Amino acid sequence: MKPKYITIKEKIENMIEAGEYQPGDQFGSEYEMAMKFEVSRETFRSAVRLLEQEGKVHVKHGVGTFIMNPLPEVPNNLEKLTSITAMMKLAGLKDTERHESIKNTHCPEKYAAPLNLTPDDFVYIHERTRIVHNEPVVISINILPEQYFGGIFEERGLSEPLFKVLEAASGIRIVRSNTEIIVPPPTDPYCDKLLIKPETTVLLLEQQHFDESNRPIMYSIDYYRNDIFKFWVQRM
Image: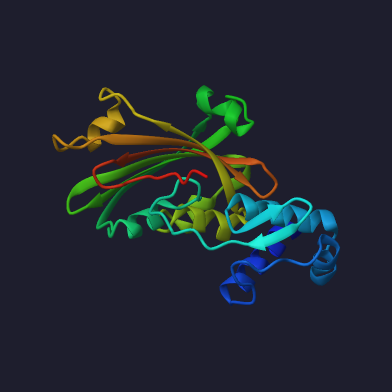
């Protein structure tokens, strides 16, 4: 179940999209808005805080909260949690082939602490290479604790988008991640697989993913060909 403040945030976003709130409109008082949505003032305040972080409202302390003009969408905005399938769609790509593998093993020591595990705990290590026109474009390695996902791959296979599989099979919804952007060395064996043209460069995103309860649910290592994928950050 979603936290109440997420539900209120989404309701307000839907109202903005439907035109019930226009750029420049001012919310009622915090008390009035909490009463309107039948939640506590703290819950409403948490929803507004998220909307402000996303640039959808502007809070003028002592004055009120105002609807902002929407920001333009940026392809592969790193501030937004986006699946690789969605990124490929934005790039106008559809993978024609995938090479995949899955193994169940002890957690590699490097990833134990980020997943709140010990090296004795078991994890699934899922590797996926996406191929477009006979060229590899993305390589992903995902480490998932067995305690949350036991049997998931045996039951559903490997063909569906991973975020979809996790939510449908386990009821676990990934809502945020901590991401480190790395330029991998050419000696990295995964990087080397993508360096197929002289102009090709590779970006590596290492991500610690969390669910709605802030549990670390998955650690992913994603290699992207930078001649195909462009990443942006909106600075405010």
